[in-house]
Image 1: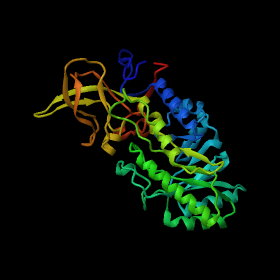
Image 2: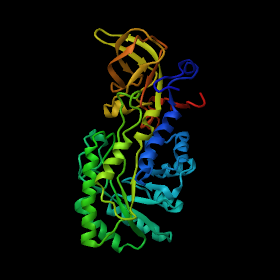
Image 3: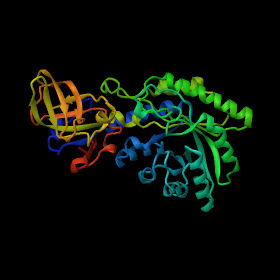
Image 4: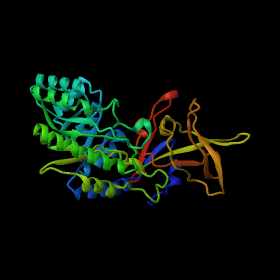
Amino acid sequence: MLKGRFPADKFKEIPTPFYYYDLDMLRETLDVATKEAGRYDYRVHYAVKANANPRILSVIAGRGLGADCVSGGEIRAAVEAGFNPRNIVFAGVGKADWEIELGLDKGIACFNVESVAELEVINEIASRKGKTAPVALRINPDIDAHTHAKITTGRKENKFGINLEQLDSALDSIARLHSARLTGIHYHLGSQITDLTAFQSLVIRSNEIQDELEARLGLSLENVNFGGGLGIDYYHPNHLPVAAFESYFAVVHKLLKRREGQQIHFEPGRSIVGQCGTLISKVLYVKEGVTRRFAVLDAGFTELIRPAMYDAYHRIENITADGDAELYDVVGPICESSDVFGRDVELNKVRRGDLLALRSAGAYGEVMASQYNCRRLPASYFSDTI
């Protein structure tokens, strides 16, 4: 199937709205990501929060990637999909006791710790279970990722991670705890980052932190985890369907002062699955206003919340019409004024019953769907079975 082309005749037989996943696109993306990471022997952990569809997870697990999880539920989903627990890292600012116990019982690779308080709880639970918890300290490097305020995570006094001023206190805590073992450090700047200078700044800051830890404490780290955040091109999903993995990993390699035997980790999510997913929705009505024309869909922010929550752009295409282009406000049926997918969207002339494709919806689409207004969750279909 060609990118940007959909089996619209088959779609007409399926109740809308639904998610459609192009597995060839997913596999092509995985090929590029693993090839480019492999040049430098980098370890890649897929960020499950981006899309936890079991079929998607199984394809990714089958390529040998690890998993980055932020809940006990994600750990379970990853293990059930075939991810090796020894390649699972567990982040999140609010890990519940049962989630920590689950990670210990499964033998996951690492807990990415976000506070001294969390570190002490992990140590207490591990001690009670007669285990030693491998931990990495998530450090806030205080770098501006130049992305949306709601998806930046690496600034000072963010709810995530440990500020640089608190690092000594965290290290002191680890030194006196007997059931937690420091294995490395972890960072995560945010999401949908397309300016690679942010990653350049992160690597330089990480080098400085490692130099200081070695000089002052003689501390040598087994692992450095640079998190995820690499963005995708929402405006040109047909022409630029694969994220800039080559440049991304090369930027890190060029600047990184990698220690002998040290493992380097990454946690991409959106850049793996974003372009393979599309939300398919039917036009219920074309509403003529005084100055505006509305295409009213049967999908809303219950199926794809990103435009309402983040003011996010998604390319929208009319895949069942080829008439002259007109401008529409594309809106959903939810009883909220924020239920708008796009304003002044240029579409081939829209009629009731047309199918619209909301592109680049494979990340933070289906996984964030809700049943607000007592709506049903969307179904999912795949290119190799439809």
